[in-house]
Image (cartoon, rainbow, N blue to C red; front, side, top):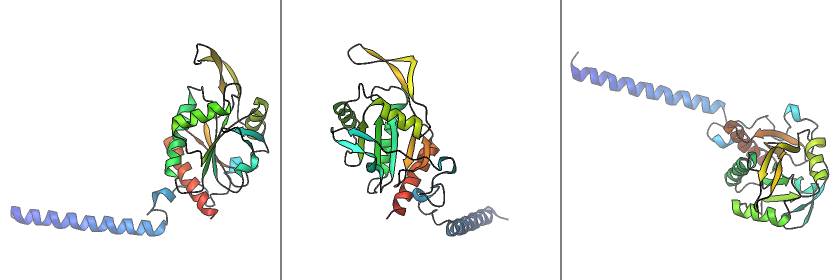
Length: 229
Protein backbone atom coordinates (compact mmCIF):
# COMPACT_ATOMS: atom_id res chain seq x y z
CA UNK A 1 0.00 0.00 0.00
CA UNK A 2 1.37 3.38 -1.01
CA UNK A 3 1.83 6.28 1.39
CA UNK A 4 -1.11 8.11 -0.17
CA UNK A 5 -3.38 5.09 0.22
CA UNK A 6 -2.43 4.79 3.90
CA UNK A 7 -3.33 8.44 4.50
CA UNK A 8 -6.70 7.93 2.72
CA UNK A 9 -7.50 4.92 4.93
CA UNK A 10 -6.60 6.92 8.06
CA UNK A 11 -8.85 9.85 7.06
CA UNK A 12 -11.80 7.54 6.29
CA UNK A 13 -11.31 5.82 9.67
CA UNK A 14 -11.34 9.12 11.57
CA UNK A 15 -14.52 10.21 9.77
CA UNK A 16 -16.18 6.90 10.66
CA UNK A 17 -15.23 7.26 14.34
CA UNK A 18 -16.59 10.81 14.38
CA UNK A 19 -19.93 9.65 12.98
CA UNK A 20 -20.15 6.87 15.58
CA UNK A 21 -19.44 9.34 18.43
CA UNK A 22 -22.08 11.76 17.13
CA UNK A 23 -24.71 9.03 16.87
CA UNK A 24 -23.90 7.80 20.40
CA UNK A 25 -24.26 11.31 21.80
CA UNK A 26 -27.63 11.70 20.05
CA UNK A 27 -28.88 8.44 21.54
CA UNK A 28 -27.76 9.42 25.05
CA UNK A 29 -29.32 12.86 24.75
CA UNK A 30 -32.67 11.39 23.66
CA UNK A 31 -32.61 9.26 26.80
CA UNK A 32 -31.88 12.27 29.01
CA UNK A 33 -34.11 15.32 28.44
CA UNK A 34 -31.73 17.48 30.52
CA UNK A 35 -28.58 16.62 28.57
CA UNK A 36 -29.01 19.53 26.18
CA UNK A 37 -29.15 21.98 29.08
CA UNK A 38 -26.57 21.37 31.83
CA UNK A 39 -28.30 23.92 34.08
CA UNK A 40 -31.24 21.53 34.39
CA UNK A 41 -29.25 18.36 35.01
CA UNK A 42 -28.54 16.76 38.39
CA UNK A 43 -31.35 18.57 40.21
CA UNK A 44 -31.62 15.97 42.97
CA UNK A 45 -34.99 14.28 43.55
CA UNK A 46 -37.32 13.79 40.59
CA UNK A 47 -39.54 16.39 42.27
CA UNK A 48 -37.22 19.30 43.16
CA UNK A 49 -39.78 20.55 45.72
CA UNK A 50 -39.65 17.25 47.63
CA UNK A 51 -37.28 17.44 50.65
CA UNK A 52 -34.25 15.20 50.73
CA UNK A 53 -34.94 12.11 52.81
CA UNK A 54 -32.84 13.24 55.78
CA UNK A 55 -34.66 16.60 55.89
CA UNK A 56 -38.25 15.41 55.92
CA UNK A 57 -40.04 17.23 58.74
CA UNK A 58 -37.54 20.06 59.08
CA UNK A 59 -39.17 23.46 58.64
CA UNK A 60 -38.13 27.03 59.31
CA UNK A 61 -40.35 28.06 62.26
CA UNK A 62 -42.36 31.20 62.66
CA UNK A 63 -40.17 34.17 63.60
CA UNK A 64 -40.03 37.95 63.81
CA UNK A 65 -36.78 39.70 62.92
CA UNK A 66 -35.56 42.98 61.39
CA UNK A 67 -34.09 43.47 57.93
CA UNK A 68 -31.17 45.57 56.69
CA UNK A 69 -33.44 48.62 56.32
CA UNK A 70 -34.82 48.35 59.87
CA UNK A 71 -38.15 46.95 58.70
CA UNK A 72 -39.88 44.15 60.62
CA UNK A 73 -39.83 40.82 58.78
CA UNK A 74 -41.43 37.53 59.70
CA UNK A 75 -41.47 33.94 58.44
CA UNK A 76 -43.87 34.76 55.61
CA UNK A 77 -40.90 36.13 53.66
CA UNK A 78 -40.12 32.49 52.86
CA UNK A 79 -43.59 31.47 51.78
CA UNK A 80 -44.63 30.98 48.17
CA UNK A 81 -41.10 31.06 46.78
CA UNK A 82 -37.81 29.21 46.69
CA UNK A 83 -35.13 30.68 48.94
CA UNK A 84 -31.43 30.06 49.49
CA UNK A 85 -30.79 30.63 53.19
CA UNK A 86 -27.53 31.15 55.08
CA UNK A 87 -26.60 31.92 58.66
CA UNK A 88 -23.64 34.28 59.03
CA UNK A 89 -22.16 37.32 60.73
CA UNK A 90 -20.34 40.22 59.13
CA UNK A 91 -17.15 40.02 61.23
CA UNK A 92 -16.65 36.33 60.44
CA UNK A 93 -13.27 35.78 58.71
CA UNK A 94 -13.69 32.01 58.36
CA UNK A 95 -16.60 30.44 56.43
CA UNK A 96 -18.70 33.56 55.86
CA UNK A 97 -16.67 35.23 53.09
CA UNK A 98 -16.75 32.00 51.09
CA UNK A 99 -20.46 31.52 51.74
CA UNK A 100 -21.18 35.08 50.63
CA UNK A 101 -19.07 34.55 47.52
CA UNK A 102 -21.01 31.43 46.59
CA UNK A 103 -24.33 33.20 47.14
CA UNK A 104 -23.18 36.06 44.91
CA UNK A 105 -22.34 33.53 42.20
CA UNK A 106 -25.78 31.99 42.59
CA UNK A 107 -27.38 35.44 42.55
CA UNK A 108 -25.85 35.95 39.11
CA UNK A 109 -26.53 32.41 37.85
CA UNK A 110 -30.19 32.54 38.89
CA UNK A 111 -30.93 36.02 37.56
CA UNK A 112 -34.36 36.15 35.95
CA UNK A 113 -35.80 33.43 38.18
CA UNK A 114 -37.99 33.82 41.27
CA UNK A 115 -35.29 32.42 43.59
CA UNK A 116 -34.59 34.67 46.57
CA UNK A 117 -31.71 34.88 49.03
CA UNK A 118 -31.81 35.32 52.79
CA UNK A 119 -28.87 35.82 55.18
CA UNK A 120 -29.60 35.71 58.90
CA UNK A 121 -27.00 37.10 61.31
CA UNK A 122 -26.13 35.17 64.46
CA UNK A 123 -24.36 38.21 65.94
CA UNK A 124 -27.00 40.84 66.79
CA UNK A 125 -24.60 42.68 69.12
CA UNK A 126 -22.57 43.86 66.15
CA UNK A 127 -24.82 43.29 63.13
CA UNK A 128 -27.26 46.17 63.25
CA UNK A 129 -29.44 46.86 60.20
CA UNK A 130 -27.04 49.62 59.16
CA UNK A 131 -24.05 47.27 59.37
CA UNK A 132 -25.87 44.60 57.37
CA UNK A 133 -26.82 47.04 54.61
CA UNK A 134 -23.26 48.31 54.36
CA UNK A 135 -21.98 44.71 54.21
CA UNK A 136 -24.41 43.89 51.40
CA UNK A 137 -23.48 47.02 49.47
CA UNK A 138 -19.76 46.23 49.70
CA UNK A 139 -20.42 42.78 48.29
CA UNK A 140 -22.67 43.83 45.42
CA UNK A 141 -25.89 42.34 46.79
CA UNK A 142 -29.11 42.87 44.83
CA UNK A 143 -31.40 43.95 47.68
CA UNK A 144 -34.47 43.40 45.51
CA UNK A 145 -33.74 39.66 45.72
CA UNK A 146 -31.60 39.32 48.83
CA UNK A 147 -32.47 40.30 52.39
CA UNK A 148 -30.32 40.41 55.51
CA UNK A 149 -31.99 39.81 58.86
CA UNK A 150 -30.96 40.40 62.46
CA UNK A 151 -32.66 40.09 65.82
CA UNK A 152 -32.32 38.80 69.36
CA UNK A 153 -29.73 36.05 69.73
CA UNK A 154 -32.24 33.78 71.43
CA UNK A 155 -34.50 34.01 68.38
CA UNK A 156 -31.91 33.36 65.67
CA UNK A 157 -30.12 30.67 67.64
CA UNK A 158 -33.38 28.93 68.43
CA UNK A 159 -34.13 28.77 64.70
CA UNK A 160 -30.71 27.27 63.97
CA UNK A 161 -30.47 24.92 66.94
CA UNK A 162 -33.96 23.96 68.03
CA UNK A 163 -35.80 23.90 64.71
CA UNK A 164 -33.14 23.06 62.13
CA UNK A 165 -30.86 20.98 64.38
CA UNK A 166 -27.60 22.75 63.45
CA UNK A 167 -24.92 23.70 65.94
CA UNK A 168 -24.63 27.36 66.90
CA UNK A 169 -22.86 29.01 69.81
CA UNK A 170 -19.86 30.96 71.05
CA UNK A 171 -16.45 29.55 70.18
CA UNK A 172 -14.02 30.83 72.80
CA UNK A 173 -11.10 28.98 71.20
CA UNK A 174 -10.82 31.52 68.37
CA UNK A 175 -10.75 35.28 68.76
CA UNK A 176 -11.68 37.72 65.99
CA UNK A 177 -10.09 41.17 65.79
CA UNK A 178 -12.62 43.94 65.22
CA UNK A 179 -12.11 47.40 63.71
CA UNK A 180 -10.90 49.79 66.36
CA UNK A 181 -8.71 47.28 68.14
CA UNK A 182 -11.43 45.36 69.99
CA UNK A 183 -12.04 41.64 69.67
CA UNK A 184 -14.83 39.09 69.94
CA UNK A 185 -15.14 35.33 70.25
CA UNK A 186 -15.91 33.42 67.11
CA UNK A 187 -19.47 32.14 66.68
CA UNK A 188 -20.09 28.59 65.48
CA UNK A 189 -22.84 28.46 62.82
CA UNK A 190 -23.79 26.27 59.85
CA UNK A 191 -21.39 26.44 56.90
CA UNK A 192 -24.03 25.09 54.52
CA UNK A 193 -26.35 26.93 52.16
CA UNK A 194 -29.91 25.77 52.70
CA UNK A 195 -32.54 25.45 50.00
CA UNK A 196 -35.96 26.27 51.45
CA UNK A 197 -39.21 25.46 49.69
CA UNK A 198 -42.34 27.63 49.39
CA UNK A 199 -43.88 26.02 52.51
CA UNK A 200 -40.73 26.79 54.60
CA UNK A 201 -39.66 23.13 54.54
CA UNK A 202 -35.95 22.45 54.03
CA UNK A 203 -35.35 20.83 50.65
CA UNK A 204 -31.59 20.34 50.72
CA UNK A 205 -28.38 21.48 52.41
CA UNK A 206 -25.19 22.15 50.46
CA UNK A 207 -21.65 22.68 51.76
CA UNK A 208 -20.41 26.01 50.41
CA UNK A 209 -16.83 24.76 49.89
CA UNK A 210 -17.86 21.78 47.72
CA UNK A 211 -17.97 22.75 44.04
CA UNK A 212 -20.21 19.81 43.11
CA UNK A 213 -22.63 20.69 45.91
CA UNK A 214 -22.83 24.27 44.68
CA UNK A 215 -23.53 23.11 41.13
CA UNK A 216 -26.26 20.82 42.44
CA UNK A 217 -27.78 23.67 44.46
CA UNK A 218 -27.85 25.94 41.42
CA UNK A 219 -29.55 23.30 39.27
CA UNK A 220 -32.06 22.31 41.91
CA UNK A 221 -32.96 25.90 42.80
CA UNK A 222 -33.60 26.56 39.11
CA UNK A 223 -35.74 23.44 38.77
CA UNK A 224 -37.67 24.10 42.00
CA UNK A 225 -38.45 27.66 40.94
CA UNK A 226 -39.60 26.45 37.52
CA UNK A 227 -41.87 23.87 39.20
CA UNK A 228 -43.70 26.70 40.97
CA UNK A 229 -44.61 28.46 37.73
